[in-house]
Image (tube, rainbow, N blue to C red; front, side, top):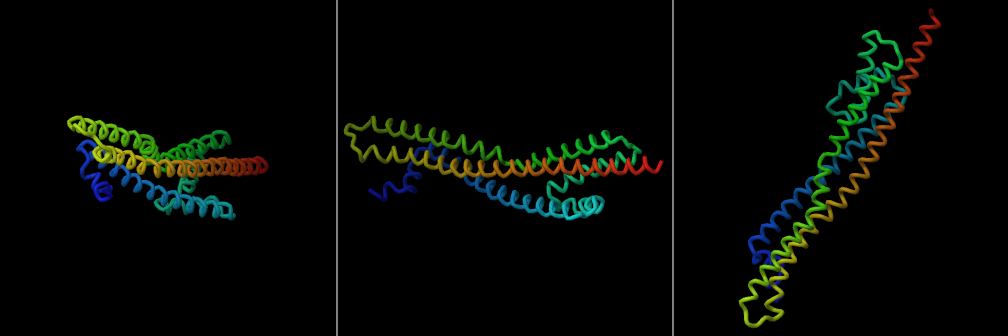
Length: 233
């Protein structure tokens, strides 16, 4: 009896529709785990790169040196470093056009950094919606397989004159495996989504804070330069 009700035996003897649902859920589960591992290592790398750049930024290095380093290592830079480079690039372009108005310079730099910030966040949030979909839809897909399997089992029992627990149990067990696989796919996706969403919110807050701090530094530098020019005149 135990051998007849093993998981493998139940899967192999399920109806074609239930087997199709199980196969779909297994593919979704494998894809979900692959996305989870990719996102885990990607976020870990982003955090490390942001911490390294932030440490260099506050170490006292000049903005021009940091900008030159960011431009040289653009392909290996982290999101915060690319946001910084976008702001500095726009700031320098406006200065090259002989624009001296502090408001215009700061607005241009902030817009560039905000645009870069949005691009970085779009990239960071890749696959997050997929995990959310897996977590919310997989149980219902598994439930559909279960309902179909139970319906198929009762249709088969209608032809029997005597029904016992031994004849009912295999069909119902086959159907319930679909729900189990659906939960197996959904639970890790939900846990990972919640963890990644929290980490991404922290990264976003960290980068928004950096934008404001860097904007303040740029504004102080521009104000100091304007004051020096005014005194010289």
